[in-house]
Length: 386
Ligand code: GLA
Image (cartoon, rainbow, N blue to C red; front, side):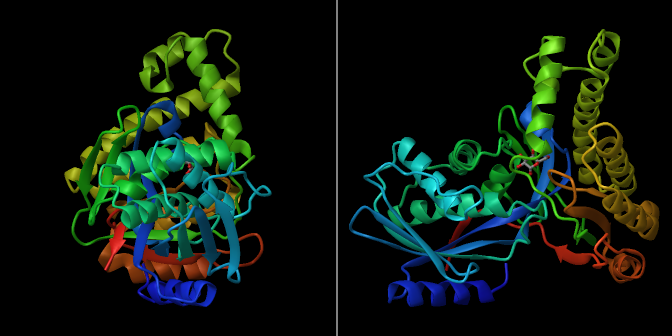
């Protein structure tokens, strides 16, 4: 995360509340290397936390008031009380992420006191890099640090944040984004079993760059196709009589398709094959086999394009450009919820300059904008800053 963010949050805090904050906390955004839409099917995902995130300057208050200022939204402010019902504002309003997390921290049984919070961040918004999960997890971290809630585990922080997103913000997301924001590890991706919440750190091979390219195709998650995909997956699980699609093999998917709607069948096929690819990718990355990883990423993209139908023609084109520029030494695929947003690529560090050039020369969004390239580091999860 840029060191300038601490200064931005401190200044916003001082301007809004007339004093300096007691502490600073951060929580990262994430990029998913592979395992898309598998999280809410109890499956596997392989994201890493990135060095872009949310930073909060915070102080405890002696009363039940929570005051929040958003440095990146023209120093807009919100305030609410812990001893009155906490209600959402209009759809899409940034304070809902804070209000929702505080409501579910209280419901978790924590004896919250009031706080003053100044928020800032550098996760590109609407890009599929989990700016919202990073905000939610940063808010839980702020209360944890201010009040010394040592028993509040990173997994609890993630679950509380997910509840806020599901029930307060209204997006029926899985657990991936919040869990990796809370539990990310420097230099590693995390293989997450989204049923048990067990994680295994998968070290990034040396000399490999994690490149993210924003396609500049805008995406909307709340109220979009996301919830429809989730319903289709649940319908498929009911058809096969399994708890979740994680429990279905490819052989059974084909043998017992019966009269299942053809679209729903394709959705289920993406999940079943993607789940296997994710487990295979963790093994490939562990072995430092970038070539195999590249093939799995390519297959994942095709499956998202043809079976799950969550890509976009411009994003498909961007993936083609990256794959051709990278060759067999790595791979590229769309990352995140879909319908635009970002592409992730893994490639040897030595190829970064040439791949940047290929994107600059060959890619334009439908609006004419070029793609934006970020080379990032696999980073640690949420925590206090000194
Ligand atoms: C969004 C959701 C996640 C996950 C991805 C798709 O990021 O928040 O829970 O479902 O989409 O893999």
